[in-house]
Amino acid sequence: MGLDRYMALCLAHPQHGYYRKQDPLGMSGDFVTAPEISQIFGELIGLWVAQCWIDQGRPAPFALVETGPGRGTLMADALRATRAVPGFHDGMQLNLVETSPVLRGRQKETLRDYDVTWRDRFDETPDLPLLLVANEFFDALPIRQFERAGDGWRERLVAIVDEKLDLQSGPLRPEPHLSIRGDDLPEGGLIETSEISETIAAEIGEQLRARGGAALIIDYGYDATMRSRAGGVDTIQAMRDHNFVNPFDDPGEADLTAHVDFDALASAANVRKHGIVDQGAFLLGLGAAQRAEALAKTHPDQAHDVKGALHRLTDASEMGTLFKAMALTADPAPPPAAFPA
Ligand code: SAH
Image 1 (cartoon, protein in one colour):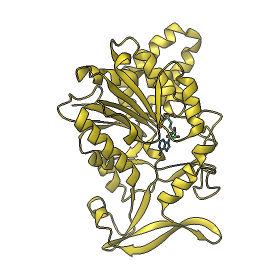
Image 2 (cartoon, rainbow, N blue to C red):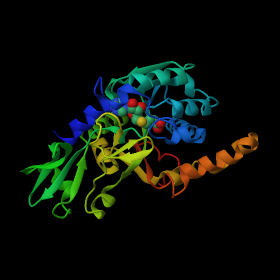
Image 3 (cartoon, rainbow, N blue to C red):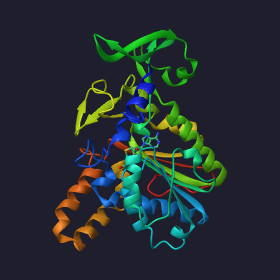
């Protein structure tokens, strides 16, 4: 089977799927995400969103949408930070796109003070000006891998090799749609595609063009330059208990992800692309250091932890450059905060 079907089964199978069974986040889970590290992350993203909304003339009503909201921590911090923005909460229709029943339960608790509508898919969200946040969402969506072979491509398929699951090259096919992206790849070079990611990005772009707004996408990933510089990409990875494990051992028991092809998302969305910028630069541009200082002053007992969290979110040795931010807007929206014009 294709890697996309394998990932979809491992992550979302109704009975055995990784995200259907458990809450994988936090220190007791398999991995930690930025909003779980510090409230600063969600607060600054909340203010970024509110600034976009103000710059676009405070449209009301509007849809505030988060795809893959995890424990709801980012949204709770964003909403607390935007309470003082006149009209923002009154105009917003809060929509969370989440497929995991376990995480929906967590979100319900975290966001119990708010009026939330849950959706299974992005295209079920209301037809309104859109402000969208997606942190570590696209990396969880299934990908396919193709290997350059002469004028054609071989898909890498999940098969049983020596009684174990592993990748094996499929038959040679032309796959003309890949040539635009993979033209400069050497023989044997790999390319990754995510049909579902591009479909969702296209739906987001359509909504931005029709109704206005902005989308903020943060994840680990690459752009077109990085894609070809590396001579191809092979980014499928599995995490369990804060360690990398083999993605083909114990299907459904580890978090499976792939790096995000930001340029593929931007082309599918077909709107104006801002970035990509490093997460560290993005957060510092929004005032992360000043916010950390203020927090440390109000809670001197936590000053050390706050400093450590800021370092983790922004430093190049931690999440600062591995993670990237990209924003999407449709003309004539002004450029969003913290993205160089
Ligand atoms: N944004 C959160 C969680 C990241 S984990 C954070 O930063 O902490 C990935 C999230 O995406 C989880 O909430 C998972 O349940 C959700 N998810 C995975 N596949 C999905 C899909 N196809 N549709 C909607 N949500 C999905």
